Length: 261
Image (tube, rainbow, N blue to C red; front, top):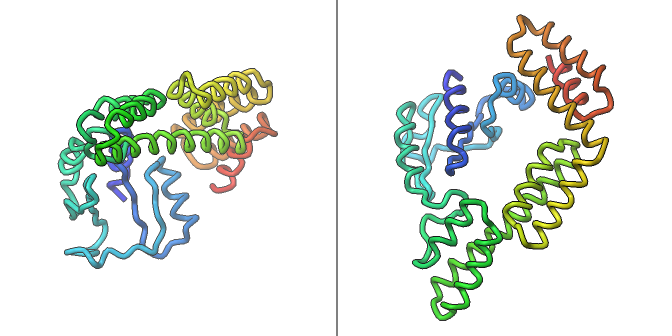
């Protein structure tokens, strides 16, 4: 548990560069208790719950905590208790195209892959399609071009899903972030135009503005609670917030947090 702050910091700072961290829980506490423990400490690292078996590795579960570093080629490159930071840095340096899912692309597609990494998804897809036509007789080249095109389509689908989920839960900051990314990354396309128009309409909506304001206020309340002296003061602040913003999704979230204390 002492490693949680450093793991969380590492995850937050490096996830955009291609780092994924998972805390694997394999003891006997209830799932709700584990989730609350992590949430109370501001831990954002995903935590699969039970059902994990590492006995097939060289040292297996040699006491807890125990960690593994898996490189971008899906091979375990390190295991142990400490010293993983340097290994992670070395493996991240191998990733030329964070988020693409390939360590290398066929010669001639490097700029296309870089456009994808930069978030210029429409450009990456268009350039990949054009390059594919020019080298239709090169099977490896076509395969990599198709890979990039498919990844662009996956990104569009993922962002659209995030926008829908954000709207459904009234977490409009999340919805607008996804829509803005779609609008920018797919500028000049039907996807981009639709996302831009939808984001504009959401920002005009009075109910959406109310929800956005409430979420901003909840964020300030949670920040203030970090400095509160005891749980009773934190709970009161959350209950006061609920009364003030009742009817918003942020108020419902505040009530859940207060009830969990």
